[in-house]
Length: 224
Image 1 (cartoon, rainbow, N blue to C red):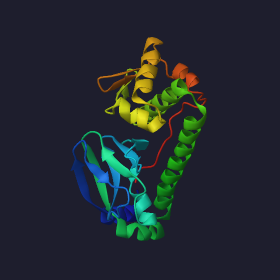
Image 2 (cartoon, rainbow, N blue to C red):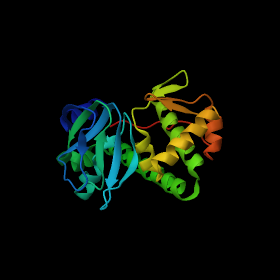
Image 3 (cartoon, helix red, strand yellow):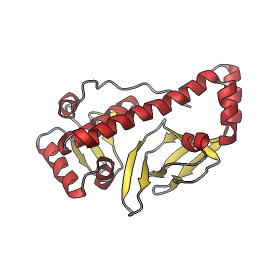
């Protein structure tokens, strides 16, 4: 960053926060005074329906920016929860419009992050509507693995994945039983193995083919 950018970001940042697994970072309907960048750890974005059922919107990884929705619209449309110990960079939300005014290039990066989330949600909707269960699970695992590669979290075709099968089921609109059986089929086909919090994909190209994905290249994301 340029010196003036560094000075502004030091003012914009108010500290760092460490939260334990299970902590709600942002709550749907809340008006949080803070924005966050995930430095370490993983979590979930989700919505709760009136009948108590949960829809996982997506999975949170290091580098993700949290709370922009409340910063722009006044309240959160979903909740964010830590699934493992997380370290967050904390920003003062009241400075967001000054950020856009004085740091347009970095503000564009923030807008880009929001746009890529919108693009991902479009893919997710297409998956829910058009991919069958096996294709959907393959799509989700492939996307997660590609994100892990971009973050340097993949080692020897394996990455830590501290989520539950129920989280994946809630993201894809599948029952837990159906998700479990689909994962078992992928395992027997030697396409993907997810056990003990570790995801192993020996042949990403083959799994991506099953997921109906052509582009398996990671996306270089800016960090706020």
